[in-house]
Structures are given as C-alpha cells and as structure tokens.
Image 1: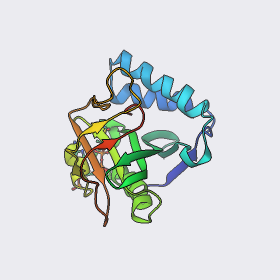
Image 2 (image 1 turned 45 degrees about the vertical axis):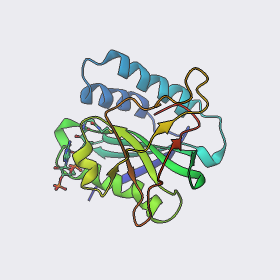
Image 3 (image 1 turned 90 degrees about the vertical axis):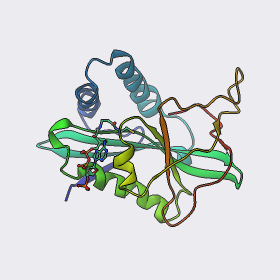
Length: 188
Ligand SMILES: CC(C)(COP(=O)(O)OP(=O)(O)OC[C@H]1O[C@@H](n2cnc3c(N)ncnc32)[C@H](O)[C@@H]1OP(=O)(O)O)[C@@H](O)C(=O)NCCC(=O)NCCS
C-alpha cells in the first residue's frame, strides 16, 4: 500500500516545489506552455492561496525513495447545478511518474480523494481528462455530457470552461446532477 500524504495550501514540504515541477515535466515532456501553467498554479493558487478555508486546495502525494512520484490536487469550489449551489471536489494535476505506472499508487490516491465524496464532504467530484478516461472509469467515474458553463466569463458566459475531450465526474452512491453545471469560475 502506498503511503499517501495530504497537504493543505499553502503548506508544502522542503524541496517539494522543485520535485513537483520535475515530476510534471517528466510526465509531460516538451510541454513548455503546460509546465508554465503548472508552475503558475503552484505559485499563485497554492503558495499564494489567500481565499477562504472552505476552498483551500489540497494536495495528495506519494513518494518513492524520497521523491514525489504521484500527485493529485483537489480544488474545492461552489458550482451551480439544477439542484442548487453545491460544493464539489474539483480535481486536477493527477500525474503518476512513468516508472511507477501500474503500481496502483494513482488508484489509491484517487480512492482517498473520492472517499471525501463518499463521506459527504463534497457532493461530487468533477474534472476533465484527455487520455485517462479508462483509468477513471475503473474507479466508477462517469463521463459527464451536461452542458458546462462559466457564467462569470463576461466574454462568453455560455462557453465550456473545460478544454480537454472528456469531462468526468464521481458521485459514489449519490448521483451526478442533470442539466447545466455552472462552474462560476474558470476551468481547471
Ligand atoms: C492516468 C495516470 C495517472 C494513471 O497512473 P497509473 O500509475 O498507471 O495508475 P495505477 O497504477 O494506479 O492504475 C490503476 C488502474 O488503472 C489502469 N489504467 C491506468 N491508466 C489507464 C488509462 N489511461 N486507461 C485505462 N486504464 C488505465 C491500470 O491499468 C490499473 O488497472 P487495474 O486496477 O485493473 O490494474 C497516469 O497514466 C498518468 O500520469 N498519465 C499522464 C497524465 C494524465 O493523463 N493524467 C490524468 C489527467 S486527468
């Protein structure tokens, strides 16, 4: 079993910032623009987090031989659905180092994340993915084909704030909402 560490922004272990950047660049080699977005997210969204406690981002990591080999970040947020305002676990930066793929660490991290939905802390988890749809389906996640919008986007409040091919959700024993989901903010 993996030993999963949990951090709340802005806390981070000594040297972890550099390790996370290295992990990201090894998972997504030659992706300078994404890497910059990841670094910006670490600096502003994590180290510089100044929002309410309720929405404090959480990071889950697994180390092997002292190095971070798996990361997942949860960004709690309020969204508006046809059921009303709901607090959800926004999920991003799920990455596993190529050397540990298949070891089950990423799956264990996801179990830790989704257990917060199972225990009622969040009504569901929502995220986007390109190549990992099958990974999430094994974890009982479902493709979300609801219309997703960001009503705070003044230029186009009806545009989909996500950009990857698949939006997926996890609701455990509960149900994902039907109809429009308004992220009330940018995609992640
Ligand atoms: C997706 C990712 C995190 C999975 O990591 P991993 O270390 O291979 O995951 P695990 O070892 O915990 O595998 C858990 C299960 O998912 C399966 N799996 C992993 N990746 C899969 C994929 N892309 N499609 C289908 N199944 C997948 C594994 O075979 C394993 O199945 P099993 O439980 O039946 O043995 C990793 O491939 C990765 O970092 N990919 C690049 C970044 C990425 O796409 N992240 C997701 C962004 S939303």
